[in-house]
Amino acid sequence: MNISLRSPALSESVTNYIQDYIVINKLKAGDPLPSEGQLAELLGVSRSPVREAVKALQSLGIIEARQGDGLYVREWNFDAVLQTLSYGVRINPKTIFELYQIRVWLEISVIGDVIKLISDEQINGMETLMQDWEQAIAENQPWVAYDEAFHKLILDVIDNETLVKLFKVFWLAFENYEETELLQASSPQEVLSEHLLIFDAVKKRNADLARKTLLAQFVGFMERINRIVAQKKPEASSSYRQSKEVM
Image (cartoon, rainbow, N blue to C red; front, side):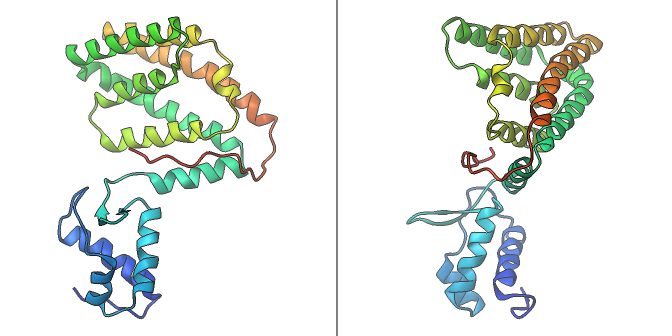
């Protein structure tokens, strides 16, 4: 492989080389990469630019450094997008509303295909989830994860990995949002009831009803977001939790 190690910057050239190495060698998630020392020797450079390149690729979610074990390819993900969105939410609270609006548009637009493609097995899986969700609420246990799992099951039906990963980014952006009022505004039972109506429409394979019940659930949440962000001014906040790995 021929690369230029002079322009525009040495570490950037090394970064590009590592990405090309992964693609050309058809490496998959979990496959090992040459060590920093091997890369430096291979390219005829010092360890410093290689170390900088590795850090850059880690921040992008392309590779991971396992302590004492070396460098490995990561599964393709939206980690960098999540970091950018989390920052955007911090400097402009309206971003959280716009993110949710995008999610609404996406989920409403695919529900028709979901109804066409969903299998009896997948419907049974959703029914089991609803029963577990109901039991968690009855026992006063955490329930928000069931909400996420419900919508993921819907999106899983159309077998679009990129859309599912994007949904996960949206969800984590909301989890990292500091206004917990978003999750506290509705009672757990109210949220469950809204989702039971959606599930009933899916179970009946009624696309129009599924779209209607989805929209009804989304509208109330969007109104709450709008009220909250309207009261906030853009500000730098240090109260965000560390971003979680995206899938």
